[in-house]
Image (cartoon, rainbow, N blue to C red; front, side):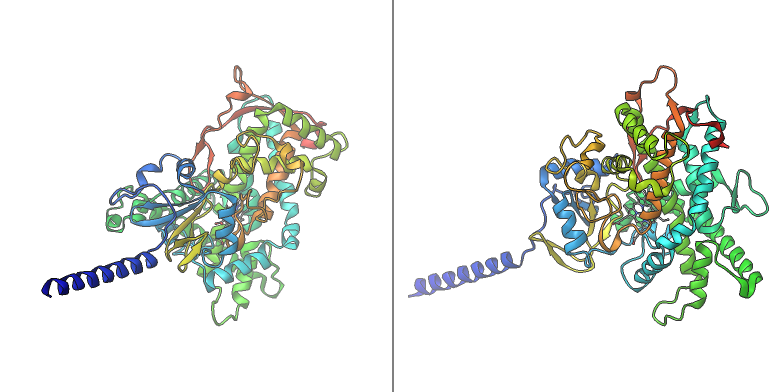
Length: 512
Ligand code: HEM
């Protein structure tokens, strides 16, 4: 009798345990597959030196959606067009935020600049201002004369250096900075040397932008292992604070100067650049929910400078490297250039673009192989979400590996080859977020708002650099020696700067 009670009790216990185990199995989350993390550091040791390539190689083993650990932080990586579409389209509303990283706090005006601001009323307002006031076709057209003047200055400058080696990267950076800064805030705040009106020299400002790009792309250990934050082991936060102070002094000066000009003009005031437009909007703003404060204007201006200059300049640099490495591509481009300019009677203008499909194919192919932000800017889950059958928890950081997607063998034939022709065959592939096989500007709510301006600059510059000049490599260097190694940051640029010799190929009067 006693033993049957015990058996019955054990059977009941077993049934209960089985029930509990089934229940916990049912409620257990299904995470995406991924490499086993180490204690404390997670998978951080597997990322350097080029995280997008390390993640690409890991994804080959673990799949198109993969989970890794950055310290104690959960990071999910999408490495196929299908998974990118899941995050940037199907569940875009959940993943349209940004993780709260030190770079956003210290170099993004305490998360008020558009790049780092979390999804919410401030971000919605900022985006609306950008899209309806700053990057409209009408506004961009109204600043075309600036781009034309700057381009002419750039090309004449290259002409003056004919026959001598030039560091093309430096020339391009100078030109993109003056083009963007004249549109955003006029160009009187920089010059070769500090003056009464210029607060920093051009080279100092370039250093500030470079530092911003580096610090916004780094993996800062304190972000991912919070108890180590106070030690700032890599010294990044210290550098971020120094940079914040430099940019803040610059923006304060620019805003105060613009406000003084506005007061001086009184009723006759007409906005002449983007800072004027933003200040006017701030003054007229009666929105009770989110007012466009002067602090917010500063943060938005801050976005436009590094966001606009380095991105366009580095895209041009990659395109030039690829074209020089591929003489057949250059020959076809020249054919197109000669055709649209009537045998080289004039420079290429923005309204020539629709007649230049080969140039467009070159730009797309460049951005396929060299996406500027290979992991986009990090996205962040605002709530729990099931993606492709996997549970992604609120607070997960999501990276879209566009470098990997651009080389996906199911979508691209000879994925490692530079072949612009692929974009001239079959169905048209858009580069502005409609096709998830090619995502240089992202897609969805967080897509780059400045891409129209960026593309206008890139297209005319790349076209005219090869229209206006033959480029000779230094003695003994062959086109295949041009270095294509990447240097990682928020934007990924060529590791080695190319020195080349320009030789004019158009009638002389065009360069004056
Ligand atoms: C060829 C040039 C450019 C490229 C390749 C590029 C690329 C990108 C990428 C990949 C993102 C992140 C998208 C995401 O997180 O999903 C982005 C965001 C952004 N870009 Fe661009 N960009 C370019 C030009 C510009 C220009 C000219 C400006 C402004 C003058 C600009 C301003 C911004 C801003 C403010 C954001 C943050 C948007 C947000 O978080 O809501 N970009 N860009």
